[in-house]
Image (tube, rainbow, N blue to C red):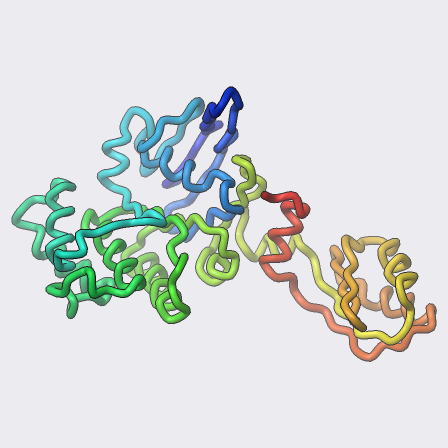
Length: 310
């Protein structure tokens, strides 16, 4: 287990009110995971990361990262863990090499190892040809890769990424995503991604956890979440009106029914299309098409939150 928390809690007191940013979090992340930590803005994702890094103290509870206690051994945690925040900054009037050298010295990297490490990490993030370029000339995507190089210089076992693709164009996003896979596959780096972008997490992570208002709602593999969400039965029909919707809603194993133009979308726990087709036909409707589709991760997200997420 590379991350394990026990009732980890952070309470802020603002104007006489208590705000539970993180509420009794019990989370496990396995070594080798690409773990997605999902939730709406303000759910407590960044606060969780900062506590795991020992950068802010929990109100109660605790945890371990890479075997180190996040309260008593926070310096050891930070020595083996990398962190790329959503907002990062470099000295823009310095080169990529100059920035990496400066931060390497701050991190206590031995002088004799710095140049070799800089060369290696710039090759990993494919910025070796821009080592002597001023950071001011870099695009946002290049700065994101430089931020990753900056944390890789410590040879971390685990990397925390907070909203890593926010503001990136599609090409830069795809490039960064492939870089994450490379780090995980070739360098055996465990990656913890905090995000509210379901599309990104769906393509990259093997396990995900849903957080809302500081509470961990559910944790599982993406495949298991999709199985639990059931199926989506899409019918294109003529006739019936609202009465058809009401009848379908009463069918056993139906979770939700939506109507858009001539299409009816039925969310059900299992493939009950034959029962639905029989019902709709008996009501005098003409069925043009019917198909069963797996739910999207977005639909899983709203099913878990019940529409009540902030």
